[in-house]
Length: 339
Ligand code: PHE
Image 1 (spheres, rainbow, N blue to C red):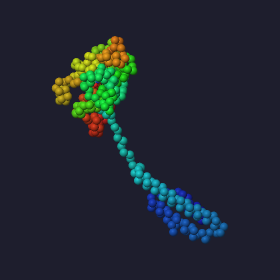
Image 2 (cartoon, rainbow, N blue to C red):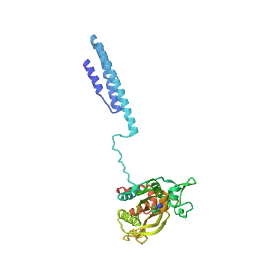
Image 3 (cartoon, protein in one colour):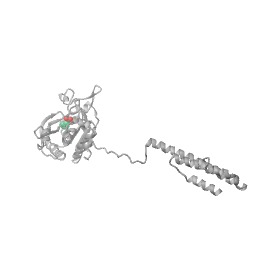
Image 4 (cartoon, protein in one colour):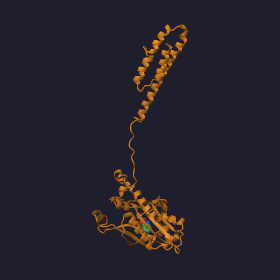
């Protein structure tokens, strides 16, 4: 008799259930009005007196274990139902992880940096909110200089001294103020101009500007560097330098590359000439060197600057500059396969 009760206790301990119905069946089997416990209690009177105490303790024990089991199974079931409500089915396969891709502006910027890194240029960066000195005055553009109108400027809080930089030449001024030649640096970054937004121009865009200063730097050095760049970047090695004007360089030039006239697009983007303008450049004006505490009688240098959007548009045949800033996934996803 006692063995039977102990067997039942073991059975109860080993029992587990996942559904309400199973728990209920279990409860009826042990604790119900026709359950094991009822039967055992009714047999109690037949137990010899000397075994009554031990038997009584055993069935009470069985009752307690069975009740606790029912309670704990119910709590466990409630918890998993609650979890399912919050998290759903935890055993289901997860959502596929979507991989992003680099923005075309970053891709082209990194490519330009890499090309110049290979010939010893380092990367320098500076603030987008600039003061008048670094953006204009130090670059040979004193107050009231008419060339300031070449770059329509956003001023901060009507304070004419604080502005959004219109080119990353301001970074080069900062670099020269803190370093003595030899200097070989490129400055990539975002720039701002108060211009109407259209397919070809935007009030925010990106530039990479370069600066090289050492003893005996000549225009020939500049030309060789530009040839190297256009060859590496576009696989084209025919360039021409058109005389131009920038206040911070003298002489100054506009760089065109010969793109060719093989396809219809070539005709379109070069307006039938085969030539494409890609950047401005020149020999750093001695006044700029003096402003930045570099002795122009000892050193000379060249500088150049290009718009990243323009180059990205050429490389990937992008027809409208606004596409870079709209974050349309259908546009951005097209650059997934480009490293
Ligand atoms: N800073 C000029 C611009 O933003 C580009 C440039 C840089 C031209 C260096 C010449 C030399 O238009």
